[in-house]
Length: 331
Image (cartoon, rainbow, N blue to C red; front, side):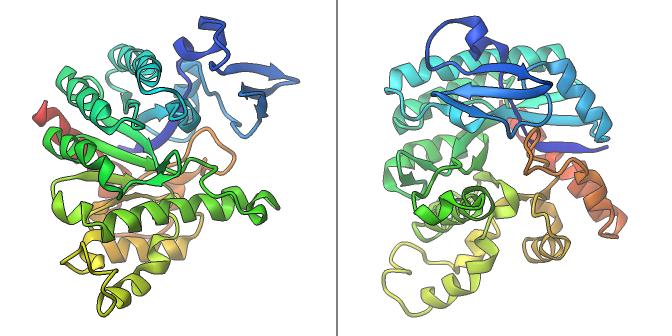
């Protein structure tokens, strides 16, 4: 059994074919290449099928994936919209994702979207979404209008996430930092994305979010980004610096190990280090389908590590099954 927990979809109901609203993405083919047009920009980084579910499942078959956890494309979280408008757009996607799950119950699970620009509104919607029982949690961006997720304004959302047992998948916005250097050489993706994930995870740690809510299930994209690289500095600062320890009683490493991480590191040594550090029960198979920075051979990547059979099974599917089963039990 293999279970990919990091795969994106643009549901047909949100596309320009379903309405002529300018905020909707347009997806088309140009000389055989898939193009997504959004906000006046053309994105060509989605190199595999992005909309058609049959095409997505065919790609999963080719990658030897038995089950996939689909979530929205991050720009379609629409944090720039007014909250009520954001809720409308989130519900379009959530209803469509629930339909897809019902049509493919043996192959597909899904995470929804929320208007996190209004955390109290998002908390209420998350509670309703989890009570409905079809979706297993939500995807959120690493920052919301420039504010990272450890900020106190998000406390109602984290309370609801813990109470409902929702799986919260944290993914970089892809444009979290505006340094001119990140505009060169594809660094916005190779460096800024993992930096944004590490920043929001570290912010949550030192703000005490993971300590206050020990039953949270938070999954970090891209192996946690650069989080492992700064763990020692966080631990050291917490040992003496008043600001670093003002909200956090436990060691930062204790909070870091409460997160779950996908396998998408593009580095076998780093992936081994991640498994050793957080434990094999906190690492889940992830591909970042359908993007060019994903790993189309992610199953082989894990199997090539030569892990013990029980550890390999847990990472390839067991951990995902356990987390999502917990969601079913809550609902």
